[in-house]
Length: 127
Image 1 (cartoon, one colour):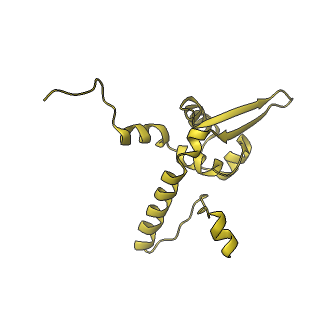
Image 2 (cartoon, rainbow, N blue to C red; image 1 turned 90 degrees about the horizontal axis):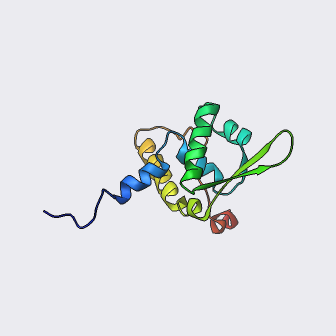
């Protein structure tokens, strides 16, 4: 059978390549509503070594999901935030969270991580 395209371009593989690193999903999740410094990300994701967190942030930056802003001060101040492309991944992350939460509940387990479910502004107003 002849292929209609050259190379292998699977949408699911592409998504996993971009967000499937050890801590990439957590980093993206924490940046959804916030701009954070490296130290803040370290506190939110304590299981990540500084080297691993730096590597994951660089890969996210290379994939245009995260923007790194460096301020010319001493000591250096660096902030991370999502790009428009990074923000577009939010529904996928929320679906992953909901699926994982339901799976854990089916096993009688509680969610125990630094991720907290995001609420839409409408739900926040109702509470």
